[in-house]
Image (cartoon, rainbow, N blue to C red; front, side):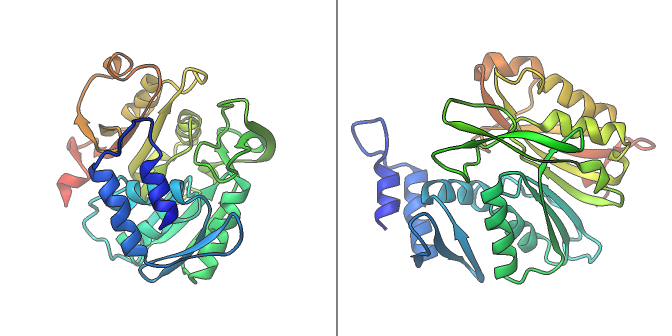
Length: 296
């Protein structure tokens, strides 16, 4: 409980704000009920029937809220129980998104990919610990080339969700890790592709475009990251790839705090130089102009 209270009161304001997020954090503690520390930096926590090992209670709580409370990766696929359901999860971190997809699509086959070495180790451990079947995980950064890539890891938090192919500050250490092309792993139908790659979104989409893999992918959820240091990952190019390949899309700003359907040109003006947002893309059937959701 000490960790949760510390998280709640760690604010620049001189007073504690009784907000929905703060109330929710206390509620999460009551739901979790039991946290035991494996080591100085790792703890075990139960979410329903799942037993997880994680690092950093602050980050864990934030990710849990985003995935399980805000349901930012929810997709209203009609037949959630079909055995042929396939989900590809780029940026699986320690496995919370994998668990979410397993609960949402109980019989699905899931391919998880994680670049950060320590996060991948916890991801693999959590999958094995919970004996999750039909789940495969890959270690590597997803890009538009195969080989070795440069990756930056937060020295203060090796499992930080800010670890990426973009150098975000002086406290990030450069390491070399395997670089993989997602197009080599999408050769059959994929019902849902989720991408949370901290600034590598355009590289991933470009690879899929060149390999002509979008014909296999019905829905895509992208957590888009804009950073002034990464001009190559331009939002207009990301949307153009989706549009050219027959997707209709909508934006979800600030992780479902605010909905909007706006031209891409207004984003920087409205939200400053750096922003994250979710892009929900759905395939349109060229013959009819009808989206996947409208056929269900």
